Length: 421
Ligand SMILES: *Cc1c(COP(=O)(O)O)cnc(C)c1O
Image 1: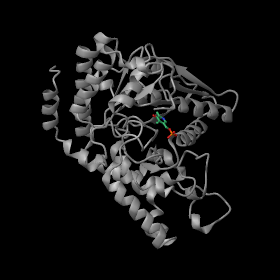
Image 2 (image 1 turned 30 degrees about the vertical axis):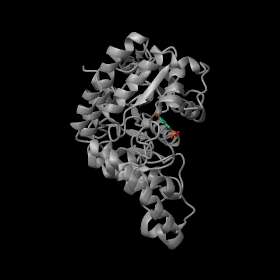
Image 3 (image 1 turned 90 degrees about the vertical axis):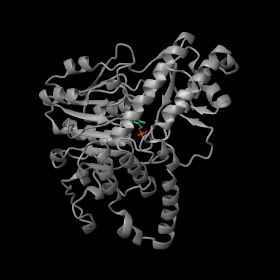
C-alpha cells in the first residue's frame, strides 16, 4: 500500500460516491469528522425541510396532521425498510432504540411458553441494551434471566458459543448486528437459523449496521429488529428510532405499551382496547414529528447512493485505514481492535493505544479531527462513505503517527472524562 497523500487523492478521484459530500452542510471543510457513527452530519435538504416544518406548524396548525403528519411513522418506516431488507409494512418509526428494545423483547418473551426463561446476548452488546433486558427480566418474574455470553478477545463476537448455548429454555436471542466498539458484524443468517431451530425468537439491534452494512432481514428470516436513525441514517440529533416486526408475527405479539396509536379505529375513542394487527400495533402515542420528519432526507440519500455501493466504499476505506495502520501505526504501539475479515467488519475501526484518551483529546483540541473514544483505550473511527474521503483517512493516520512520535499527547490528561466526546 502506498502511504503518500497523492495515492489518497487518486482514490478520491475514482470514487463514484464522492459527489454525495456536497449534499451535506459542512461549514468547516478542514474539520475531519470521523464520528458519523454517533451522530451523522446534517444533509442540506434537512435544513430546508426544518424551515418548511416551521411554516407548516405556524400556518397550517392542526390541519397539518391530516395534510402531512398522521402517517409519518409508517411512511418513513417504509423507506427505512428498503435500507434493512424488509417489506414496507414491516418497519415503523417510534420512540428511542432503548424503548423499542423493551417493547419488542417483552412482546417476544411473552409470546412463547413460560418454560422459555432465558434471554441470550453477548458482552459486546451496547450496555443500554443489557440494562433494558435486565429490566425486562425483573418485570417478567424471578425465573427469567439474561445469559451474557463472553467474547474471547473483546473484538470478535462469540458466535459459536451463542449457537451452542441456545436450547429449549431460550426465549430470545438479542444481539447488535454490528457491535458498537469493535464493529464486529454477525452472520445474521447463521444466528437466525440456530435460534429458529430451537423454537426461539431473535431480535437484532441494527443501530451501527443500518446504513453502514447491507442488512437482509427478510432474506435471513429475522423475527424482530430495532435501530437508531441519528447515526448512519443522518436523521438528526435525537431523531426517533425504528422497529421491525416480520409480517406474520405482527398480529401475534402483544405490545406492552399499548396506546391509542395501536388501537383499531383510534378516533372512535372507544374505552375498550382492540389492537391493530399490522405494524401499527407496536406504536403507542403521537409521532414525534420534529424528530421523525428529517429521517426521510437521510434515508433518501442512502437509497439514492445504494447500499451495495456504500458497502463497497466502506470496505475500501476501512481496508485502506487498516493497511496504513499496519505500516505506520502498529510500530508505534497502536493496536487494531476491529476485525480484519471484511465479512465480519462494519464501517468503524477501533484503534487501541495505552495513551488512547490523551491521543483522542489531542486530535480534537489540536488537529481539528473528531473521532470518539470508548474505554478502556479505543480511539473509534467512524467511516461514513457518503462524506468521508480517503484524504481525510490519510490525514488522520499522519496525525496519529505525529502525535505519538512527537509526544504531543503528553500535554493532555490521562484521566478519562467521557463527557468530552
Ligand atoms: C446508539 C445505540 C443505541 C442508542 O439507543 P438510544 O435509545 O437511542 O439511546 C442503542 N443500541 C445500540 C447498539 C447503539 O449503538
